[in-house]
Structures are given as structure tokens and as C-alpha cells.
Length: 105
Figure (cartoon, helix red, strand yellow):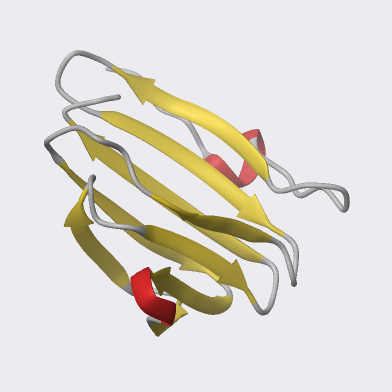
């Protein structure tokens, strides 16, 4: 077992969103992203099979998808999609995001 407190281990940066690899194994990967208001994870996809989840821990913004799709994103929201499906995020406020990828890429 291991324990990581995301609020103590990961801070924000004014120049670019911050990324912390929380866990990496053959079964899944967990990454914490911290965004300042206005920062963005551009829409992208990965040409592999699997799924991912994006969990908003704190803050508000928008989940981004193909063809200009946008869904509100606020604390407690979970987006689940195939890894190959275009996805991204734009922060309207300071925002903490926890991403799980299975299998890991």
C-alpha cells in the first residue's frame, strides 16, 4: 500500500498546468493535474484501446471533446470515455483533476 495526499504533494503553477504521476502499474495509471484558471489540457486522443476517467476534485471548467463538444465540469463530476475518443479540459477557476487510465499508456 501507499498513500499520497494530492493537496500536499501537488501545487499550482502560473506558467503551465502541473502534473503529478500518482501511480503507475501494468493495470492502471493515475495522474493528478492542477490547472490555474484559464489553463487547458488541449483536446487529444491516443490510438490505443482502453478507457480513462477524469474526476474533478476541486474547481470548475469544461470537459472538451471532438467537434467543439463542451460539457460543464465541476467538483464531483466524472467523465469516462475510451482513450481513443478526443478529450481535454479547460479550467475556469483553479481546478484539480484526477485522471485514471486503464490499461496505462
